[in-house]
Length: 174
Ligand code: ADP
Ligand code: MG
Image 1: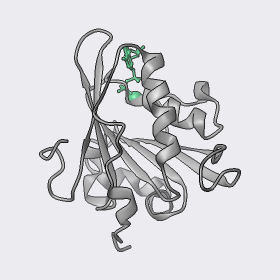
Image 2: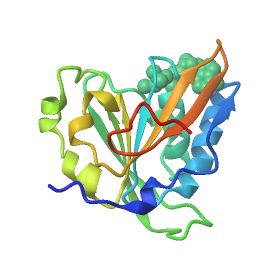
Image 3: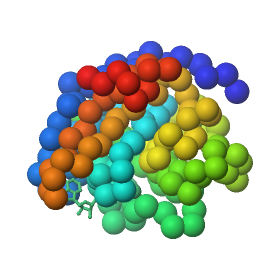
């Protein structure tokens, strides 16, 4: 399938860069971020193990009406899909939105491992898809996606920043 541009998803949000001092604060940041997402949003979450990617994902999930505790880094499954709903105040408030949490940690051999999941629907559908370890599946990611990077600053401190632009991932940081 074509990597069709969706310019609205490329706009960096005013929320980032942001620093947090606790997992709760990272989840709260995820909730605020969720309100800015549009149907079809695909968001990469890069960063080392323990950087807080899953905490941020929990916040996004919570704002979309998905129980935060059900979102965890999957051990065997690559992707989990949940029935979400756009929150009050969102332009699509009340409408259903599929929420997908994809963790490519085990796909260090490349995106071939994605063959077992419906990734084209996740990446080019109308849901919200968060991708942990995006660098493992980069060749098949949409070119227009928002890329967030989480950095581990100290035991409790994390920084979340935006990287944008196909071909510039990992280099252009705002
Ligand atoms: P990842 O998915 O990036 O591997 P997780 O979100 O699963 O990371 O785990 C982050 C870990 O760091 C959790 O144990 C969490 O309690 C801890 N932590 C400490 N401070 C923060 C913070 N500011 N933001 C997010 N997590 C934090
Ligand atoms: Mg994780």
